[in-house]
Image (cartoon, rainbow, N blue to C red; front, side, top):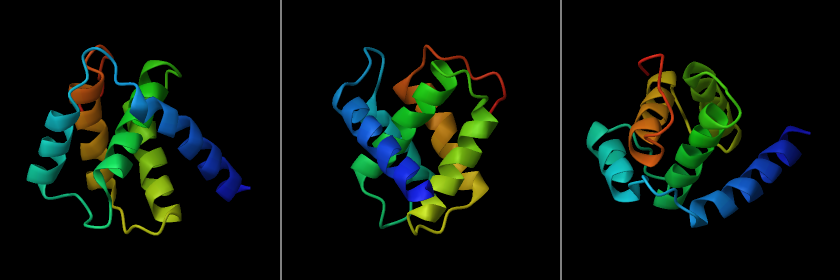
Length: 110
């Protein structure tokens, strides 16, 4: 069941990666993640953008708290076989909200 959910999320997010919001800065997002040193070498730019966009959707449209988005990203990366940690997932959510969807308020300070 979890594999099906991950597949559906991946398919939905794939469409999202293709359409960047007006204020999104993909290059800045990727630069922030890479300069933070928290990017796993096996994660492609597409993977990072997919997770960043999903964080924007979950926080901005679904009303998920940023901290819950961090946990969701942590769990998704773990299911996909990447060795995540909560700090890296939190950094991804922080920069997603800052660079990919600056119109979404980040009220937790992640």
